[in-house]
Length: 251
Ligand code: ADP
Ligand code: MG
Ligand code: MG
Image 1 (tube, rainbow, N blue to C red):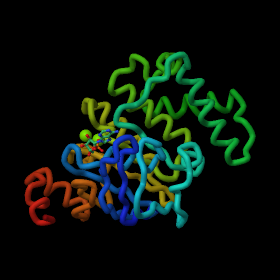
Image 2 (cartoon, rainbow, N blue to C red):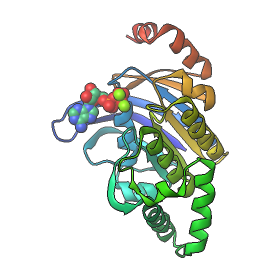
Image 3 (cartoon, rainbow, N blue to C red):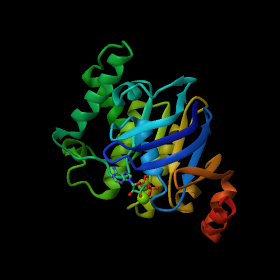
Image 4 (cartoon, rainbow, N blue to C red):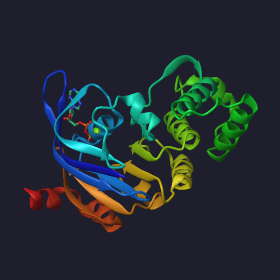
């Protein structure tokens, strides 16, 4: 589903190279975890996948279902089913969460040539999905992410994902700022999305989240490259021994 080949990318503003020859393949049905020390380029990679314009790809390619997405803007990528849950979800003042969700779902349907959702149908979908994530309807009346706690923001991200049913989900440190109960709710939400025709990339610092979202593959990102890949046992190894040995071995 996703094939990143020798990707090099830099910050558009000042030309600093952050991604330096990154290779990564993620198959449909797979849950891939990306780990790595702070400043490795994990968030940058997720921004580049989502099509943020602050970064320039200078070399290599990103293939999604066999086609390069480099020329597509963020909206076109979203319409093709790429969804990014941000490490720091953006606040959208003045728009009730409910309204935001409705617009997002209808934008997606429009891009696919489908009719607008009827309000009762939308309400049924949103109530059902929110209930599973233990999000109450009062929260949905408030502007998206404005004054939400860390845990509420993360749950709101998973709610968007549950409603939009993307094909490729990228979760950037969805575990940060979550207490253990919220972590389980979020993990259940992600696990409910696991399916043979969907791929999930989970970016995380800690093994803890991977106890609940068990990955098929684990990749270590360091200085803009994947320096080691393995199965879930690699995450346990990192938790026990840290990154130093793997970084030394790759040097
Ligand atoms: P990670 O998510 O792995 O902690 P990031 O992708 O956030 O790493 O950052 C990688 C490196 O790139 C860091 O050194 C960070 O300071 C730098 N960086 C990323 N984006 C920008 C930007 N827009 N402006 C300046 N520096 C940036
Ligand atoms: Mg970081
Ligand atoms: Mg980050």
